[in-house]
Image 1 (cartoon, rainbow, N blue to C red):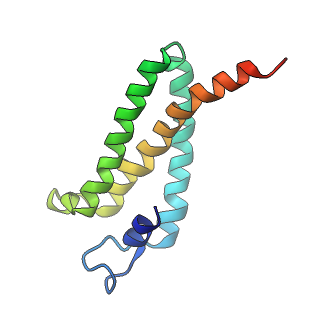
Image 2: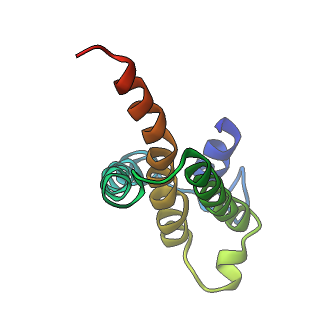
Length: 120
């Protein structure tokens, strides 16, 4: 969201003690990692989840989205600092990696259904 974007990228004068990510890291590096993990999500879906029922897939992806969102809550409350994990690592291995893969898990069933509707 826009509020989170501001919180992650605001400097020390706006958000004291915040992560203050530079835009290159926040937009570029995390997008590259996210693209790769999205691809991994497609491969995992194709190889392991394509035979699952939609209900099971829905529940698994919902649970994984909750876990991915929890990383945002933990970093905003600064738990990662208390645990000794730098902001960039915690963000990268939390929302930047888990988010795109989970998004692919959630999106793939809809894509498969739509592809079955299209005439050959």
